[in-house]
Amino acid sequence: MSETYDILVIGGGPGGYNCAIRAGQLGLKVACIEGRKTLGGTCLNVGCIPSKALLHASEMYETAQNDFAGMGIKATVELDLKTMMGAKEQTVDGLTQGIAFLFKKNKVEHINGFGKIVDANTVEIDGKTLKTKNIVIATGSEVATLPGVDIDEKQIVSSTGALELSKVPSKMLVIGAGVIGLELGSVWRRLGAELTVVEYLDHILPGMDGEVQKQATRIFKKQKVKFELGRKVTGVTKSKSGVIVTTEAAAGGKPKEFETDIVLVCIGRRPYTDGLGLETVGVTTDQRGFVETDHFKTNVAGIWAVGDCTHGPMLAHKAEDEGVAVAELIAGKAGHVNYDVIPGVVYTKPEIACVGKTTEQLKEAGIPFKVGKFPFAANSRARANHETDGFVKILAHAETDEILGAHMIGAGVGEMIGEVALAMEFRAASEDIARTCHAHPTCSEAVRQACMDVEKWAMQM
Ligand code: FAD
Ligand code: NAI
Image (cartoon, rainbow, N blue to C red):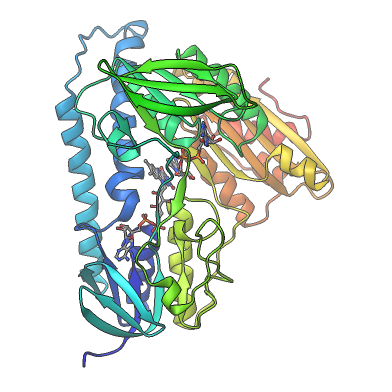
């Protein structure tokens, strides 16, 4: 009989691999079981990283085509999709191998295989059983499907297929104006596709601050994205020349058909716990299949869950923080995640970033608040860079001035949101940022000016 592990982590994505590495650092005997050949989960293999590689490359392509001339740069620009895809693969390979290196460095055993929980102390992998004191479920999520729509990853694709198209489609139709639809839709639009986005709701980016939703819609429309809001897809069928998408108004009636080359289905993701043995051990899930937890503990002692397979935003950094917290709790330390301060970034051009409560959430909760806003059109660095679209919006408590939320749209806001997240983690007031010296000229001065605007003393507009 082999030695008993302190932790067996099932799943090698951001939740699982960070849990395993932290456990290794803390001297625990830990192994990470991953069904894929490579580590890194959805995020590194078919999610965050390949999508950002293509977003970056396609943004450079579009910038070179549209903006170079105005800045006095003459260039002939030509797309080489194969090389672009190769560069993306290279980035993914480097990073997944990097996790394998970090496992070795931190004495984490990597077991390649599909894990099945037999009981609270036993996991079976391909017929072999391993004993453990704790099991961490970090099995992630998979694409949610639409009834009657068969994803073939060729003409009707999920995000995974959309990251691997071998040629630029003339037309792409995206179902769902959420994060994946806008990011991957942007990639193919920039490379030359005509983009239509069909969304069930009457607005894009559900859950984001209303003002950001409106501004983002305006900017994407300027980029020639066609939005079909308040419309639901009723069927997708392949034709000789492409794909036919039938829709009707969300409220019913008003049918409309679209002919397209590629359909991207991105209507959300669902927890992935298939074949894991949850029913056998009695781990409870909710109606939608998310593993129920209380401070990361499932209802079965010794079994924990982190990341996309459990509640909360489906984000890599949320999964990572939960993985670290669980390793620390098992090691007898005070593992903790602050769910009020989890930033979200949409990596379109311009980027969209948020942290904390939205205007709508504060109104609904009846919390008194003040608003400070600053447009990038009044920021000197944004003007020098010819990137003046967007604004920074800060929400602070009306009486205490504590920052309750930040919502931004503009070039580079995905990096700027970190400043506000840090301030919120320290429970800073908006005046704390307003009185912090920011380097000039930087786009982050817009954050400072928005904080000044909370008390209406912004000086650069
Ligand atoms: P996963 O990363 O899904 O990892 C789970 C792993 O478990 C998988 O590798 C799976 O093979 C393995 N597994 C499952 N069951 C078993 C089993 N029984 N035995 C062994 N192995 C098993 N988030 C961001 O924060 N920023 C982004 O920019 C971003 N971009 C994204 C782009 C796309 C296209 C997609 C699809 C997602 C994106 N996400 C992004 C979301 C992010 O990828 C997820 O939130 C994150 O990967 C969740 O981590 P996880 O560890 O919970 O699960
Ligand atoms: P999403 O939840 O962001 O958006 C799905 C959209 O589809 C919603 O607007 C919804 O109203 C719409 N929808 C649902 N059913 C529909 C229907 N039948 N017809 C038309 N529209 C419909 O989900 P998405 O974009 O699939 O992303 C999944 C997850 O991946 C997200 O939770 C996100 O957190 C994560 N992700 C994060 C990224 C980031 O952080 N930059 C990038 C990509 C994904």
